[in-house]
Length: 198
Image (cartoon, rainbow, N blue to C red; front, top):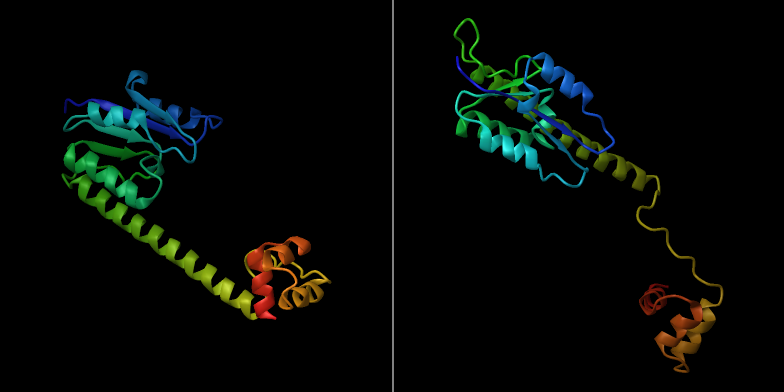
C-alpha cells in the first residue's frame, strides 16, 4: 500500500528530552523529515506541530507514536483525537509500546481498527474507574480524618487575650466594630463573627 508514514512526539517541558521517542520512531522506521514534535509546558496544551500533522495526513496515511498518552492529557481527549485520525481522516495509528493499538489490517484480514478501538475503550474505562476510585478514597479519607477531629482549611486565627475587653467596649457603644477590629489587628468581619459566635 502506498502511504505516507508520519511520527509525532510530545514532551511536557523544555527540559525533558525527546531522545527515547525519537529513537523509537526512527527505528520503526519514520523518516526524520516526517516527524512532528511539540515541546509544551504543563499548562499549555496548544500543540502547533500536532495541528500541522493533522492538516498534512490523508486517508490511508500512518501516524506512529511511542505511547498512547502522546495523543492527549486524558482518555477523553485521547479518544477524541483517535476518532479524528481514524474516522474523520481515515488514517491509521500505530502505538509502539502497546502493539494491540495498531489499526492497520493484519495478516488474517481482521481489521486492526476494531481491535484497537476495543482496547482504547477498555483503557478509557479503566482510567475513568481509577479516577472515580481515587476520588472515592479521598472522600472516605477526609470523612475518616474529620471523625478523628482533623480540621481542614486554614488554621483558625487565635483570639487575642484582650478580645473580651474590646468587645465590651464595643457593646457599650464607645467604639464601633471597625475600630475594635483595628485595635485587635483583625478584619471587621472576623471581629463581628467572633462577637456573635461566642
